[in-house]
Length: 202
Picture (cartoon, helix red, strand yellow):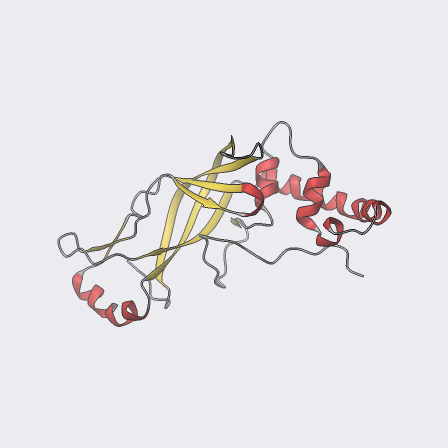
């Protein structure tokens, strides 16, 4: 029986698509963001909580004996995840936005993306993206924008691959609950944009 089951659901403003990313740059997901955050604070959540993020079998264990046996197997994984998270600084996020009406004067598409941008993940973890210079408008000469018109009739969704560095953490209490909201601060270094059809926006 396979005890360690990694969750597959990724909730995003981050858009799902298959694309190779450098092994040195970690894509932030629901699965790894708890470790990226907890590895950077003085007092992290108990390993019992982190174990639930790793294994659904552990989270749904029928009794304390099964849970204990599972924890003995999961604990080394937790320690390795924390170690890797501490060493991770370069990160990648994939987000989506709707292209607004083409601005003929500035020859660009507005995206509605401004700093700081908060991207929510599961378990009350989020990323705050800072320094989003250039993402609010996608500059494109009129002649190139016209070539995109047919694709825009089907969808105005743009996909952004954002690359940056982790610069800090932040915690806030929720409005209606004492459960904290936990944030990782990421400073953008560069981004790549494309229409959902695959055409690069540049």
